Length: 125
Image (tube, rainbow, N blue to C red; front, side):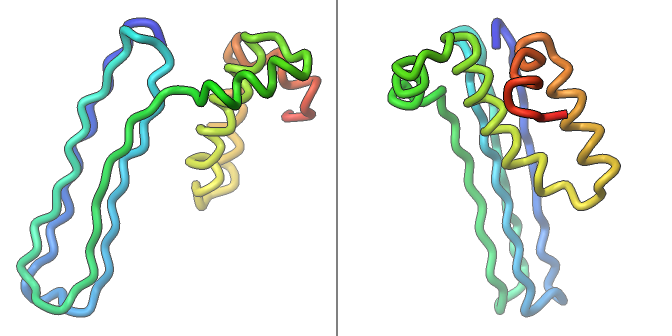
């Protein structure tokens, strides 16, 4: 949001003796203002013959139709934006394999002033 600037430079190296592996690298980014930006560069270096590898990057903004839907149901614009942003972040948070860390990250996100108003409404704590 604001004037934030993120950088993702990921690299997966598949060595010659790493046959029959599967590697996947994804960078998903949500820009919340016209001044925010992300530089994303996923890379694969593959030196083996029998592998399954993929990489990709996506960059997007909040879905205007989803915002309209929430607003048309009486949800304040700030809350609608916060709810959609939380839904985006939750996709990453739910994949954290350690419950204590996952809970800590989620609670830190919810404690942010933009999302704290959703806490009581949605029962997020």
